[in-house]
Length: 268
Image (cartoon, rainbow, N blue to C red; front, side, top):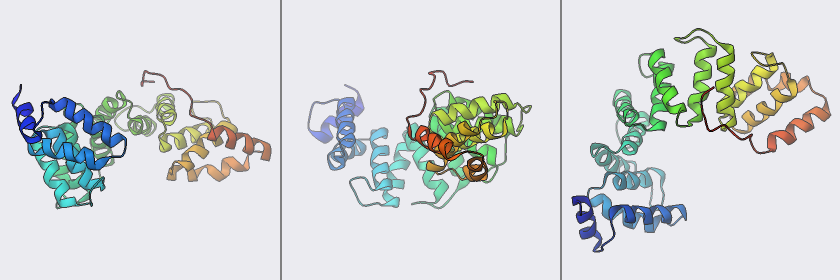
């Protein structure tokens, strides 16, 4: 038995392995029984299990089974991050980014996102890509932003697919390529990213690297608006005005249908 298992056994007074206890807690959380999940995670967290420490911190951050407490969230997520847990590092990075439970510190947030990204965490790769592309909290680096977006997209992170479309559309560190941009937007759109849906709708509206199709454009713009994309507003009324009432009704029915099945391969 490993030392973590031994500590967990001592903490719980049982024979179950850490993996078994974590699985039990996960099942409890999926069923909405966060008090039970926290009972298990809490014991393992005190025993030094980094993923359990992350889960306890996340519960305090999101008020899952306990009162929200940003300071306790930061405490547990710091322990998890120091223990090398990629998700703990990503979640702690989010606290530093927002200034919740800790002093807002963009460089520290970026450092933690990078550590998690280098461990292969897809959401951290996505966030690091955004930070490097937007240049609001870090020096812009379009090449690195594209690289991290590609890694996240390979893990089916839809916002990174949309971001890659923007990179090729706006020629950020690459030659402008409308066809590649639309291919990435379609990938993001089909996986539910509202901004990707808005940009795909715009492409069909303008006939950019795809045949002009106002009906298809409106279907995607309806989905984008329902998903909260501010980008959809730039094209929504113009596309709607080009359609007949029957076509609008058809588009609305199609927009409410399930998204098309996506390819298992995330690359254009």
